[in-house]
Length: 344
View 1 (spheres, helix red, strand yellow):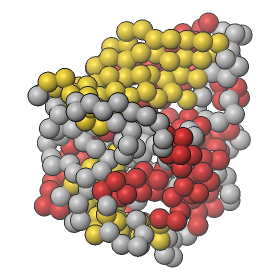
View 2 (cartoon, one colour):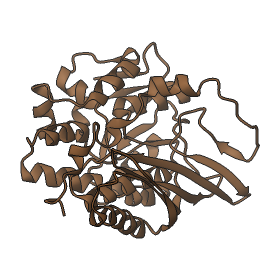
View 3 (cartoon, rainbow, N blue to C red):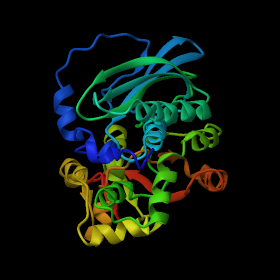
């Protein structure tokens, strides 16, 4: 199928790199009216990953929606990646995905076999997550797009938010960084097969295992690192928590090939949007420019970024180590300073 149609050639942007910039999005949402409801535990006011609505004392709905243009040429692989990315928002809230609806845009001339393969990829990844796709909506569009609206469940007292981090907390990340740069290189046919395979493997790895490990610990804050980049999502966590973060740059797993591409200027457009949004809140110190570029790189289906109390840090690392693509202890939450993030 991948030889019959090259999906990325039909799209102007790839994956989460197509997201509206965080700064622009905040302005668009700033004055929208919202209904007040005490059962709405999480809305969009703190830039959380999903909405949470309490149904009863021990049960809440977690609701999210995510879709984007092709980030892989193979339709089945694209479907898997888009579904994995959408499901991630439920895991980032500490929830379990249960139901999903397809969201699909397809060109009129796209082969039916390709459309079927996109849907099959989404269905199979949802099945792996234990979620059921029970319908959806599709329209014709010149550019293909696919994703899911996902509903999950969580206990209202055990849900996670992207704010609530406390001074002393240790920060962990569960996937390496550099996917956006690799997808930019892929569009230029510059990736070696092994690097391409690594990129696909990371983007199709559910954050289910990370969530299943972390529910046994006292998570103070959590988000998934996707289109707004590591620094963009960390900035939101720090801002919402009224704290700052010291980041040990050498402890962050940067995909070596992505760093090589960044050093020669192969960068996705979304990186520049993320830098514009968050750079004023970051003290980069002596960090190399290309490394900073990767930390602003939009990730598609990235890992979880989580803040846990220091007394649990060693146990968290040991528990994550064999369950996620790359368990990293990347920094520490500190009291609020002039900047939100300090790279060291």
